[in-house]
Image 1: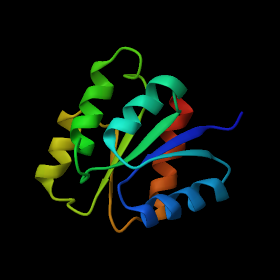
Image 2: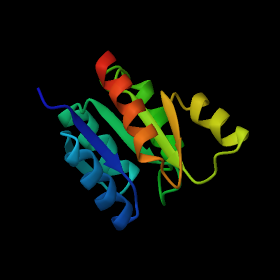
Image 3: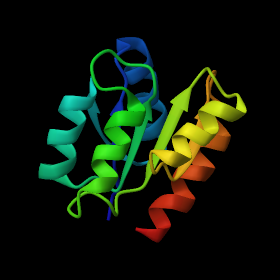
Image 4: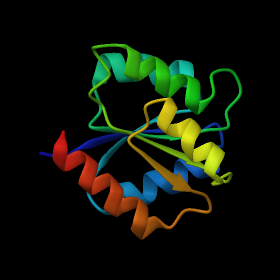
Length: 123
């Protein structure tokens, strides 16, 4: 069965590149350009994993992650947060929000795919 990944990023090019990489290795990809849309898609479609940028207007990736993890309906969905700010404080903030992993930008696509595979095997 094909796993579905919800990619959440306010940057169009980032969404498109991630979609291409993920579809190339066999994942089905849904896209959202903000946290509000991500919440709606997560509830209705229950993706196997959410790959989400931290820095977005409106609901940040941290806030969206925390809301998803607070809801019994979406809490089991693994979440990988992405950001160019990969210092210790941002990694701690990702963990406080309930993220299951953290990916630094620019992305190491191979490393990201390894994390995605490990997290989707558990779900």
